[in-house]
Image (tube, rainbow, N blue to C red; front, top):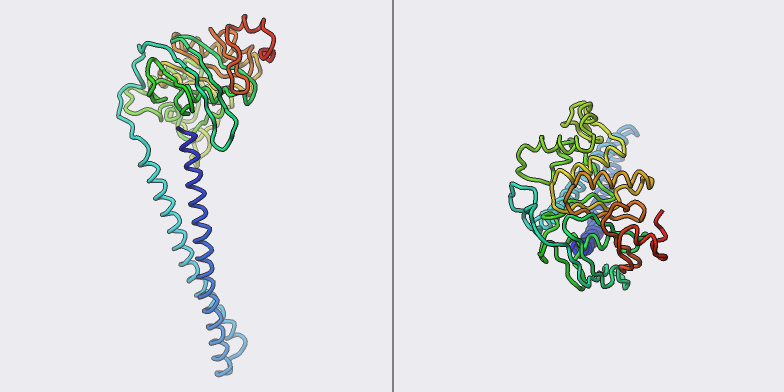
Amino acid sequence: MISEKEEGSHREVLRFLNKIKIASSKYYALNAMPEGFLWGATYLLVTLCCLEEHLGLGDILKYAGIVNQVSQAFSSILNASADTRFKVNFLEGYLSFVRSCPKEENRQDSGKDQDVQGNICCSHVSYQYGGTDRMALCDISLEIEKGSQVAIVGENGSGKSTLLKVLMGLYTPKDGSVTVFGEERYREMDYFSAVFQDFTIFPITVEQNLTFSLKHVEEKRKGVWQALETLGLSQRVEKLPRGIDTVLRCNGYGHAARLSGREEQKIALARAIFTQRPIYVLDEPSAALDTKSELMLYKLFCELTEDKTVIFVSHRLFSCRMCNRIFVMDHGKLVQEGTHEQLAKIPGKCSFRS
């Protein structure tokens, strides 16, 4: 879904930019003709008047300066008109895109019922990105039991993140089907809370960084403090200039604060915990950490999420030792699965376990 919409959006943007290029060329051509004619006619008129009236060099320069100022004002008006048209066209495209998105229902809770039953099942799933002949996923079948901690591992480009996004419903598989708790047609925000490798900390307050994705959350401050306390960030936030109302990163506010990389990572994890979904996803958010630190982070997250389903994505088999099951990907195929102890004894693709 997202990749198809993204590809379509890219085509629309390119078409729009091409229209701007053509319109700009026409505008500059049409603008240059009258402007050049105006300049030439005015200078000719000023020159003839100066010769007729026998004016000096100073008068000629004075009138030339007046002509220059009038011409610049006229050109500024034309440029402002063209710029306004460009921004209006861009706004129309944006509003059209917003109207095409499905509207969210106002919900008091933060997701589906936490007592849902069933597993995550992937049956003969294949996926192919647009513009390429290579299959990103080839005939993947797996099952993730409710309440388990599993890992998807593999080298870079093996299809780990693509498989994850298919499971989350972000990508629509070319073949096969995915069911989550018995539902084949589901929305990712109903069940999943994810922390991706390229997570973002926004230039808004600490509280808003955790709650912006939810509507009508009662006692949200209490939930925010609980999430921060769980990850050991409450004391750090209390010391910020305005506490939980401090703006993170720089956006022009004098009381903005910048956290360390590790603290921002914890903010992203606190955001995931705050949403209270039945399935948590960590797509290599600790790729910049060493193996020991990554393992500690995964253990901490498993303890915090208790009996929830947790899916880790990593290129390090060693970091997934505490997982109930590990799925090994290679060139878009599921080549091995089992516990860490079982896979560590099997030669082959699991040799990248360090």
